[in-house]
Amino acid sequence: MTASANFETQPRAIIHVDMDAFYASVEQHDQPKYRNQPVVVGGAGGRGVVAAASYEVRKFGVHSAMPMTRALRLCPQAVVLPVRMSRYRQVSAEVFSVFRESTPQVEGLSLDEAFLDVSASLALLGSVETIGASLRAEILKRTGLHASVGMAQNKFLAKLASDVGKPKGFVHVADDGVRSFLDPMPVARIWGIGKQTLPKIQKLGILTIGQLRKADPAVLKQVLGKRTEHFLALARGEDEREVVASRPEKSISREVTFEKDVSKPKVLLAELQAQVESVTGRLRSQGLLARTVQIKVRDPRFRTVTRSLTLTAPTASTQVVFKQARRLLQKWLGEHLNTPLRLLGVGLAGLESSAEQGVEIDTTKQKALDKTLDAINRRYGDGKATRGLAMNIGKK
Image (cartoon, rainbow, N blue to C red):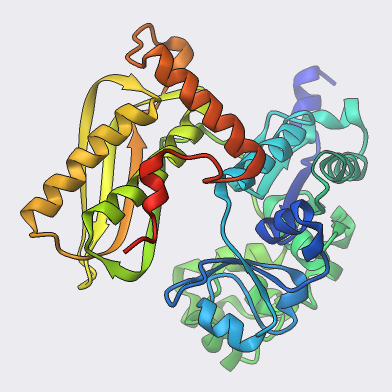
């Protein structure tokens, strides 16, 4: 048998890693007094939304994307902590560095979740379970956080495996155990069967994946149409999608929805300054420069507008980006007679590697200040070190 044939018949080994209650777990790790406490991360105001919920608070019915007011009604004793996105990105970078030590085939789905194709790593690193256990142990060692790991022959099964084991999950779906794993599961666990499709399938008497797998395709087609074979393939545990290595970010942005509409330019500029510091800090941490600056505004009537401009040369300077973002915002406010804003955001696009650029428009003094503030915020979290204007956030 040739080397080429060996490669073609090599079994697929896919791992899905999902950090447990990521944002909330980071906060509980960094602030030990909140460990084993019901922690909710998100906005505390009337328009606040739950970004993450610890497992201690989930038993009360609290979950991500829930309005904060409802979360606190369900669990009045919950500890509400603000989002520290720069800290979560820092921890995420450590986690992904662990992934890439096992394989370059890493498809990031979010800061705390990824697929890994370790098929080519088996000969060197051992079985898929050995690699999965090593990943989980190394993540815990470096970050102090727990991850759930699912292992299987494809992405669909690996994702389900990590989900059913949470928290601290470690589930391997062997090739000869696919049916016993899938058949008892609710049919809603199949990707693509949502709130509209599920009742129609249930009316056919199909409640489990096993029942779907055994159903008459002609009957299913009346409900699922052209997607019938796709869903049947998933019910059999078949999924041919490849793990696609993640590409660098195409843009970086940050926005905030105000608890109350804001009309004072001084307060809006303070928020804009804080957002610019955040996005340019991310830019520098990744060794990138940006050519395009964009702002996003939304008024009380939910009308959303974006404005952008392209710089003459790429930059990672907070001062340069803020100057242009301020110009865009002030122009919009002037055109709309200081209309109150419900939302304000800033974004950077046209990203390029700083190592490939010979043009530098940032002054040495400004670069030194940015470097110092970046170091402080990496260690202590977003906003711990900021320029004076940003300190006006929340002032009336």
